[in-house]
Length: 141
Image 1 (cartoon, rainbow, N blue to C red):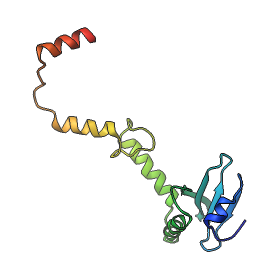
Image 2 (image 1 turned 120 degrees about the vertical axis):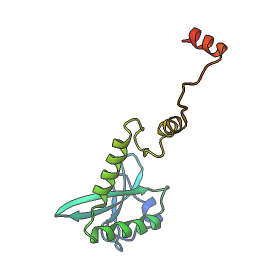
Image 3 (image 1 turned 135 degrees about the vertical axis):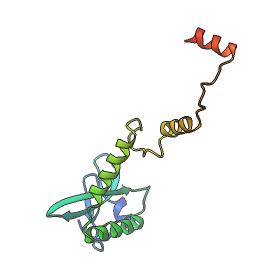
Image 4 (image 1 turned 90 degrees about the vertical axis):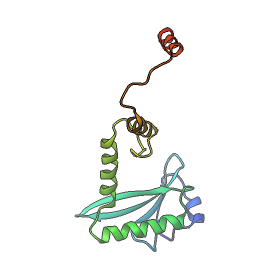
């Protein structure tokens, strides 16, 4: 289907339906078989069709998704590939810290934050335990 993407039209989509926006070329919304509604941008770079997920309905409005689609379409017009750039950012964040859980950047990961605090604040000498703490550690494991 083709037409302006509005909240009313998005809510009327059935699972498997795709609606292409009449205002922004390549801007689409689709209802997945699970019922989730996803906004995206379809474009071509070097003759290959690419797609970029913009967000889920509810977390982003149709108007907000359209504004984001215009911005990303501008990047495509400047001979950039937003999907490839996003993949590169994710790979770099994952390579920076393989201990980070998926979908978290290195800076958002709690384990990485704690590791940075401990390494930046660690004294040059090991901390001494009290006798009671040493006993508890020995008995509990």
